Image (tube, rainbow, N blue to C red; front, top):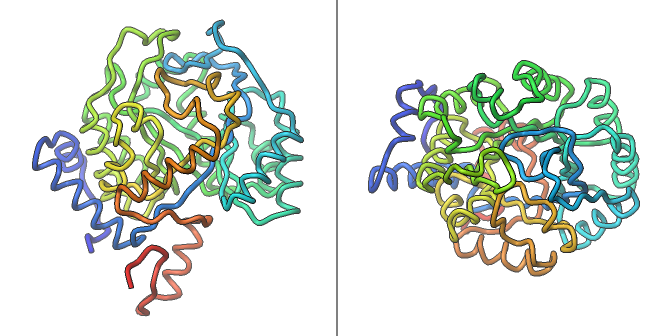
Length: 354
């Protein structure tokens, strides 16, 4: 097994710039480490995009405040509960509640979390942007398990260009608060942003390692035609794969999704990512009538499918990658505790070959 060692900035930058067979070798090394850690298991998380109302004006985002072409929607709390229970009946043990960034619905989500947690054992991840410490505490007490807050870049100048309404230090403070409160905290970046360098991306990975985040959701920059970045081009997919592989080797046992945006940029992108270091897949469980209105970037896949068809394609994606779809929570902290208890003992992981 590749050891959990400390990589330096220069080494990471070199990995990110690999091409051809050298890049393929990097991907194989990362996949080997992934399978040593998780077997062939791929954990599934169902995403419910419950609102596209947003008060922020991020330069890359299709649901930004100033995009007047978006048909705005917000699901009421009882409907959100219903969708979560449907996902639970379909076998999901982790769901992600994702929305634009507004404060209007925060207490409704508290009620949703409390009610769902009283009825079934399902991990709830929230992805609702920067909030006050008090709000995070409220959601944690209600039973929320995880929180995803992407930083998009650790280059502070580039961050400000992308996020005119936000402050880098506040974003970092929010992430550290989430960890302090006991959430499994996730973050992530975009690959190929205008003005982004290989050194920027290498520093992103070192940032992930320094703060020991539990999930790292990354994907390619894909421009949206109704944003200030509409004139820029998408990144080369090999850069994305190199980043996933380098991230796996450096951050070791984090949960890394093969994201929808990867398959938007490259048809078999998720399969390729699952063989380059990713160990999570996140199918869209949003009702089909809302999917077209939650487009953060152009040509997003799966917007014209219902949940059943999306799951069929998700299973096929994982099988085509030679992996095994695992319908369980996949908690990183619990896994670490279990590994400590089992140190020196041979145990079979879900998805391992007999």
